[in-house]
Structures are given as structure tokens and as C-alpha cells.
Amino acid sequence: MEQPSDLTLQRPIGRGVVRVGVAKEIVPVLGEMGVDTDIVFRKAGLDARLFGDQDNVIPYAALGRVLTACVMHTECLHFGLLLGQRGAISSLGPVGGLLQHSPTVGEALSALIRHSHLHDRGAATTLFVDGDVAVLGYAIYEPDVESPGQISDGVMAVATNVMRRLCGPDWAPDEVLLSQHQAVDPAPYRRFFQAPVRFGQEAAALVFPTHWLDHRIADADPVFRKVFEDRIRELEAAAEGDWKESLRRVLRTEILANRCSAATVADRFAVHRRTLSRHLQAEGARFQRLVDETRFEIARQLLTQTKIPLSQVAAALGYSEASAFTRAFRRWTGQAPAAWREEHAPPRTGNPTPQSRRPEKPRVSEAQAPAWTPPSMGSCAARAGPP
Image: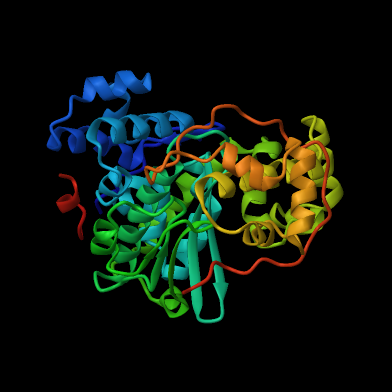
């Protein structure tokens, strides 16, 4: 039996880094657009040779810098979409192999949620199910990343290709939610996703019917699944020990679902709440402090990357009223969120840029608040289309 070919990741990746993955396609995309790749990578302060192998790792912040440079030199405001649509399930390395050989789409996505940190340590993959609607999302938690909208666009394109591979070519989302501001030309997005697209949302996500979670994956091989499970088990074992970083990743998901009590989060790690506290104390961290820092990072991203009302930002973070969020934000920054948003608003290009300064981390905690509900359901242009 021929062995799978995408088991080459030799060790777990570190904090704040990401596998090159589909980003290796930056070089050919730039070439097709007639742009000098050396100029782009010099602008981003990176060695282009890093992008020759999808299993190389780069800082997550570096991915943002190079995408900023790509947009600048190509003048293509949907460069992230062009890049992401070249992605395939193999772009996820061993995690992609496990998805491909899982029995059902639901089991595949559950594996993606559990193990995506082996591929990406700058963002969290989420899956919310509400009745007959499933929402597969992506939320960046690494602070001060340039071009987060470009990154999210690319990830949603890769996720769409992954879902088409797992479900068949006829699969299409009911709706696509993107976090960046309204695109100058939404047509390339609609053409590729084959679905309505909403910009300026609180999270990037694919919305689709839950019945697809029960869909059995064609050609899934239980022998290959065991091979990938064993490899991922080795990587997970090697990655154990960084409780603070692991908690930051989990909190990004749990805060948006209003499940960030210490007891609930400890259950995610299969430990008692006091055990989680001891691990954090050993690393000089406190649970509530990390919750506040994560809330603050999410708040900053929603205020700068979207135009959603403050009341909706407050609800997404779990505050019962916008006034409670405003009080917390004043304690974090000394400013009201509306004033902070105006000061840090990106240029009107459809692609958020890095902030001019990094605000202080939050200094005090805020009480838990009611549950969040999933997002409302509701030149280069010719290159964006179905893969």
C-alpha cells in the first residue's frame, strides 16, 4: 500500500508561528501578475526561499507583512482570496491528511478544531452549531498582525476547497462572512464562493446546513487514518507543556461562545479547575488576566477590522449591555471604544493596516455576561473563480 505523502512535519510549531502551507503559492501568483517577487519579499523583510516548502514555518506576523506588501505591489485588494483559492486539503499537512481519511465531515471538522494549532499558532478555528445551521470560523488571536482581512480571506478560500473535497464538488456554503471592510469589487468573492458574501462581520466564517456534518467522506481509508492519527499524537505529545499559550487559543473560541468560566475551560483540557490554575501559576499567569487580555484583543480587532455597531461588539464579547463594555474598554485604554475606533480606523482600502501604536493590555477584569449567538445568517479580478 502506498504511504501518504504529507507526513513531513517533523516537530510541533512554536508560539506565534504558522506553517507556510498555501502561502508558498505567493511566488507563482506574483509571477503571473508580473510582479518582482524579490521586491515584495524585501519589503516584508523576508527571505523568499522560506516559501519554497509548505512545511517551513514563519512568524504569523511575517505572513501579515508579506500580504501587505503583495497588496501594495499588485494593487489587488483581493490578493488573499487569489492565494487561498489555490489551497487544498494537503496545505494543512498531517492535519489535512487526518481530515481526508475521517469517516464523516463532522468528525473531520472536530479533528480540525482539536489539532489546527499544529499548523497555525496565530489563530483559532471554530465550529458553532445552532439547530440546522453550522458556522465554521477563523479568529486571529496573535496581536498586531498586518492585513488580517487578507489572511482571513485566504483561510476561508482554503476552507471552501477543503469542504468541497470532503463533501464533493457540489457543496457550497449558504453564506460567507468576512471580517474585513467591504471589498471594492465583491464579484471575485461571489464568483469563487458561489454564495452570498457579507463583509465587515465580527468573524470570518462559512455558513452551511448541519446535515453536511453527517456526510460520509468518499475514499476515506481507515488504515491511512491510523497513520495520521499516530503522527498527530506524536506531535501533540511533543507540544504539551505551554499552558498559557494553549489557554489563549482556547479562550479565543470560548469567549465568543460565552463558555469561558474556569471550570468550563478546564474541562476542555480534561483537568480539574485547580489543576489548570496550578499550571498557570507555574508559568506566572492567572486565568482571569488571560480572559481579560483575550477579550481586549478581540475588541481591538472588531473595532478596527469591522464597522459593526458597538452594541454588537459588546454582545460578541459577552457583555449584557454596551455600557458595560464601554466601562471595561475605558479601563483598558483610557478611551471610549468609539473614540478609540475613530483614532485607529484603517484607510479606506478594504484591507486593515497595522496600528500606529499598540495599546496597553487590560488592567482589570470584567464580570461574565450572557451568551453570544453565532453571526447573523442572513487586472486580478478575472483570476478569482472556482478552482
